[in-house]
Length: 400
Image 1 (cartoon, one colour):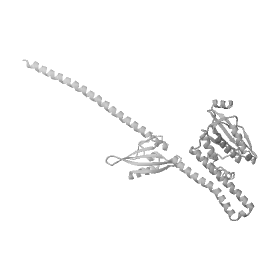
Image 2 (cartoon, helix red, strand yellow):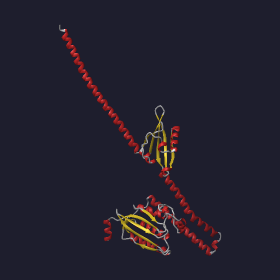
Image 3 (cartoon, one colour):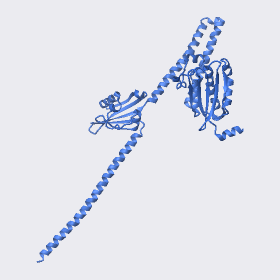
Image 4 (cartoon, helix red, strand yellow):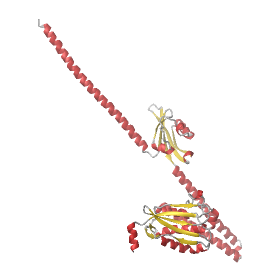
């Protein structure tokens, strides 16, 4: 009769063991599920962080980067690429033609897919102020050798192209400026050698022309050396307290006879301003600007030099004439090397075409700015700024 109770106890023990292990397995299953969820979250976060780091890396590149998928749609474009082409919209999923409408770029992608890679392809973008880009393109393939996409890297060559153009223009201008006086000197020397030297009046006239053109060559070479030194940074600016009014008086004294030949009155309206500047270079600036004002001002007119203090520790100086003025389209170009508003008159006056460019570089080396204003028939005014002497230093100078 003991079997039924024993059976019941065995069954109860089995059920208890089953419940115990079931709970234990359930807890273990829940723990594994939680750990799996944590692992998945960790993996997702790792993926997000990797993508973020990748995006930061791509956006920190100076070169533009464009990544296309196998259907030639944009998968990734970094910040530099968007800046190069002035694009602000979302690019992902669009084609190159939809975004840029550049047939040359679309053709480059096709060429890269055919040749696997294309290096040093130059692309001109006329819509962006003739921006020049160098593009390198390469196909991205998987382990099976199948094309997965195309990567393009863009280098901005605009500055380099501008420098090349400037160099070419400079060489052409220098050649032209040198050729004219050299041709005259050569021609008159040949004429003298052919017998004109036997005529005293003719030979003297020819020699004066030769001397004038030799002087023009000398001035041109000096100005070329000066601007070369200024642009290369070889000129050291020696800053010291300088009285602007005293510098103007010195320049006026040097140019008094030249102003007298055109009956031009020189007026020094500069107040007692003390600048922190290189005295020799500042004198060169004023002499150049006053000399230009005399050359191109109205006969029997006047040239005025004035100035004032500005906020922020700056001094503004102006040189004003009452000549025919400068056309509006030339105001931004008058400081370019060899640029002349009136080429014939400028050469007749003996200018080299480098004076205002030298002025600009000297003022910029002082940390200042230079510009011009003009109205047709109402003369021209040239302005430049200089650092003022600090207040305490100025007080010491005045006390001395």
